[in-house]
Length: 340
Image (cartoon, rainbow, N blue to C red; front, side, top):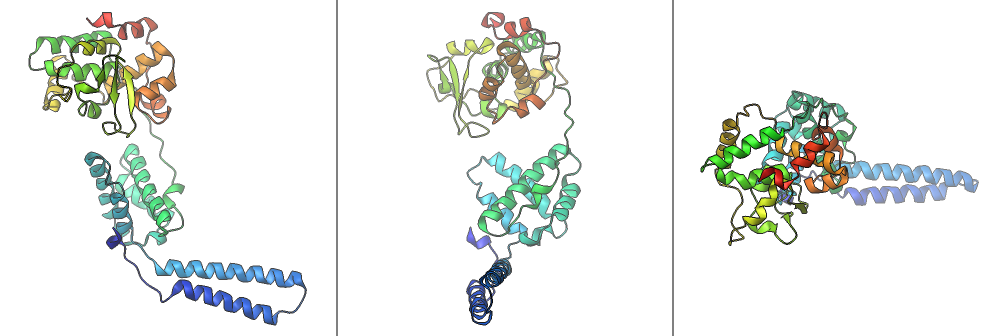
């Protein structure tokens, strides 16, 4: 990891700073007769000069390029999932392609330079811009911890406001259409359990694809998403409600059997097409679960816990649509008898 760090040495910079500071102070003590107040003020000025000099020498001694700092930051995240690392890598690569940004000293990069780079590389989308700013922010924070820079210019950049599109949730009739397709097709039957977990437990598709039947606790009537299977790394237990209750009676003998089929992407597209749902909003099942959950249980913190979010902000801005949603609809949604 240390091989990534380029260092330009200045001969004995730290020692030189200390020697010069001590020399100035000794001279001042010998040659500045006068009142104690005058001497104290003078000494305080000398101390500040010495500190500033030492800082300047340290900055000159270690100049780390943005490219090397970014690589170091990526290596520090090598424990993350391959898909997450690939996503971070794509953002870093695009930053490094901007003019000579990659070779600039991390310490010399200013707010205006960061702003210009973000606008040029990621300005086409507010969502992408915000994500890129977060990645840039983390790189500079890593640089501060390593002593490669003293401030984070990305922190001062205003984040663009994202105008969220209206959240669409599934109606009960649309849910029944999807379930009828699954029941009538032997090819799509393997999507039954994943569909129920995404819709009635709010589990992310990427998380469902990592789960095994052994993650279902029949006694507690919950499904466990361990940290290694969670998108955010946090473990949680989600109750099996509504149509997901039937999974308690489908657990096979081998607990290591994956819940999701291997050819997930093709089957998922086929399921939506055969159900006549050609227009499909991303995370439609999680949106439906979140909206129905809040309408039924009126507990935002419980919903946050079950969905695996670190706070409620994302839920309130991008996941909920309570407009025209009736309480009786939410009760039916979470009633196992409605989906037998």
